[in-house]
Image (cartoon, rainbow, N blue to C red; front, side):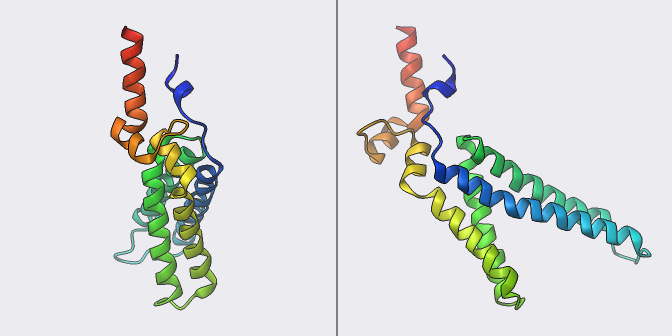
Length: 160
């Protein structure tokens, strides 16, 4: 019996949040490539390390895309990084909207982050993260240790 057999099915909300967190990851990757191509076409300036700038965007893009892929594939480890990505998006959206004065970019970025955060905290997503059983409350699931507690119970029964 594999671990995935006892795992509850991944809710639509979690998969949709994964798609929403993929959008900025793809955007960061595109931005990094554009910056790299433009930087290599222009003459080098002192203090401008185009490879470091590209690397920064690439690492952030990979992190965002890893969290996104984990959510879309239904991996529970990805929920916390997904929440962090959503919070970062809300902050970036606020900055681009307010101090940068670019509402055409800031509003969609902020809404994307807010929507992902709401989706990850809706009841089906919380139940999935806790591994709720039918008729069980969130408090009862937390007391038994969520999915880890369910795994321990299964292993205990297998030994008996």
